[in-house]
Image 1 (cartoon, helix red, strand yellow):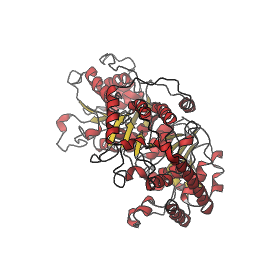
Image 2: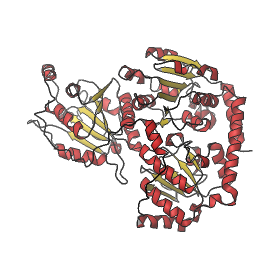
Image 3: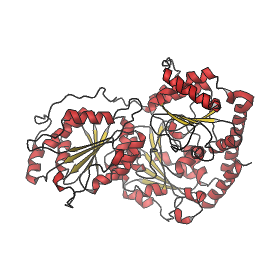
Image 4: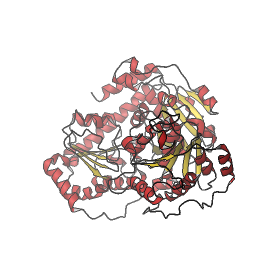
Length: 586
């Protein structure tokens, strides 16, 4: 049982206070030990894919590592999708997989697959642990902690990477397990007592997110960091090659909380026109709203056609907006300068005229920006023209909403008008996140989250539950129908979390309608005739069907979990998108 005792000590050194468990015979001893440890918060799942995506939500909520523990065999493989998402999102996911002893590898023995290396390069570290007959791991605890802390580091350009700990275990004897479970293991006399080698403790502050929002919009009193000469040389080299960097459009993708204040400072002092996606949590920020592009894709397409910018500055993660994809081919001549907390350009390596810098270089770039006098987008009335056109597009959108009140994007807009202040809003991928960015005027008090690392529709509801557990005034998930079908078992965790007013909004257009406008090929849409009323009842959730805005009025009267199924009118939706496509061409 020394492996179990070692694991508890190991988690303590990492400041990992939560573990998501998927029970099996192979990891039974580990689970029984963890159950006895009062300092750990444990979550129980029967399905590993849901468990790992739930863990991602907990990492987002806590800002510290969360572990997921599985048994051996294909159970470990179920963690791969969430591990990939964690890799591209810079999340500290700790993967602990029980395994049969190494002598069973490549034998085809039951529950014995090749688990070491199963996560490929998506795991920053893989540690294969096997204990000697004397009860000691082949790696010292200090050595393991050192390797793990390097992967969990967020210093400089090195993001947090998932870590895989594979623990080889002999077949447990039932009598031995029963005897072990009776023991008090809070005093661990068997484990090696090692001091943590982590240089810093992960901050455990989990302030009310409204206070965090208020902090973001406070007037900045900090002095800018001193300018690194190497950074200035880099910026000047860019300008010498591409003078067109002087007229940039700013696009803001997903941003961690601790970076948003710096982004606000940059936008305040440059007065640049910018487009902020919902997941940036900067949409409609009062301090910078006057320079924000409100009509999204419509205005951005118009700026491209009229050449109102000659470069793009990206802040944060890789954006969802269509313009970003156009930069790859249609606009491949436009220089792109990215400031991000993650080491991913989001563009092809073959694309020229692009630079990716650490987010810490954003404020030094501001000095360079001012030095060069990059204010050309204010000249010749370009900025005012942009603002005027943006307002016209917004009026056109309002007109479309009045004309097609039952269309899918309009129902999304109506939904946004009943979400209370201080709510947490989780946006699923595919069409919902695009409709939300286009149609809603977000309240700045809302807190947005989502999986945008590499994920499509996998595990979205599980991540929502993990992130929002008893955290805000209200919890809203905006998901598509196929996304929900892909995660039907996620409400399993409702047994363990507080019965808060969760609102699971399912936009049911009976298939993947994002492909209808892209390819016009029904075979790609996965048509179905399913609705979600009985799924809600299966998990003990309330249910309402919404076909018009009047049906939304009684949502807040339900105290517990509620499934809100949006059922848009198919014909009005098609007509809406047809009219929308014509707007930017006029």
